[in-house]
Image (cartoon, rainbow over all chains, first blue to last red):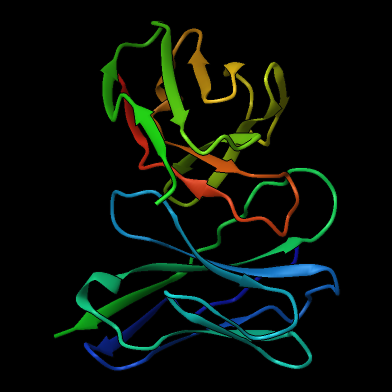
Length: 112
Length: 114
């Protein structure tokens, strides 16, 4: 699976949009981009995933660049409960069960 | 949230004792996974199951065994616990094994082996 690079930490004001970047310059054509988050002492929580097109769900939006070498997770109106470590992961889109490889992630702190 | 329950949530035991962790799901998903999370190592896959009585090894399977006699339950056993198995253990489930299907995680079991 392709490696990802994320900033170690970011701050965001409550109520503002949080934009979390991820670089995956070695991504292959059949690899999906996944985002998870982990709040201290809880299990990782799935947020969103995509292949080529931008995606939106009730939690967030995922913007993938045209060359697919980077992506941005957008939390449109961050709240204090969004403070967590956010992980960007790429996974091969074919074959049998594969583990999720979590890197170091980005510690997002939402400030009041 | 996905219906995943891990038990116990916390356990302290001694080296050499057997330990069994349970993962129970109410989603009727075919695939179930056991991961461990340690500082500096992220999440590492121990074993996974792709159906009743069908299991396979992950990246760090030594010292662990699993069983799945029912769709809803996946058990992780440490036959003779060692201090290196002190960790937080997470169960995950997915509807299929395809990599375009997300895995959903339970809240973990914090295991300490003294």
